[in-house]
Image 1 (cartoon, helix red, strand yellow):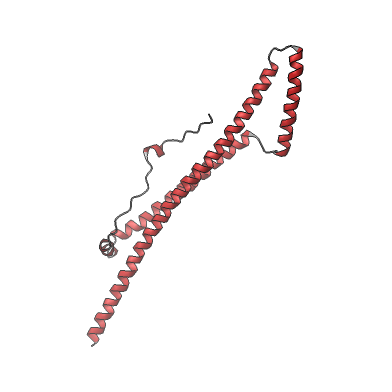
Image 2 (image 1 turned 120 degrees about the vertical axis):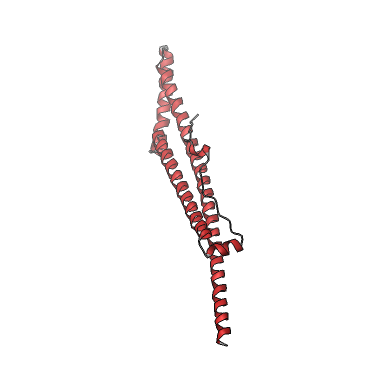
Length: 180
């Protein structure tokens, strides 16, 4: 009778260990999928925020370019009548700019470019963090797969090593930002 109880206890310990190890491996797989999703979220954020920031910067560049072109046109050789007409237009334009500046005092393209630089840095930082989290989870999981006795359970339930995130050749290149 004590021999039978010892065998049952040993079997129970083995079953509990097996289930616990299997659950640990499954949990590690879920963490990897979650970290992979984090990379997707960071990529989407980068795309959305940088696209919007570039659009804003392009709009202000166009506005400033048009303003400078009007000023240059006003200064070129004109008759007094033309100069008087353009002076009136310049005063109207200056009034519009003042009203806009009063309504939006921080509305300057240089601020937009600083915001763009900040958005680029922020997006890249989030993406790097997501990639690091993914690789850390893959590392922990892959270590379990090669560690005895967990490796026995892993092979029984068909667990395979996960691949670390590695940047492609295109991703390793510097990002070209164009305002045209």
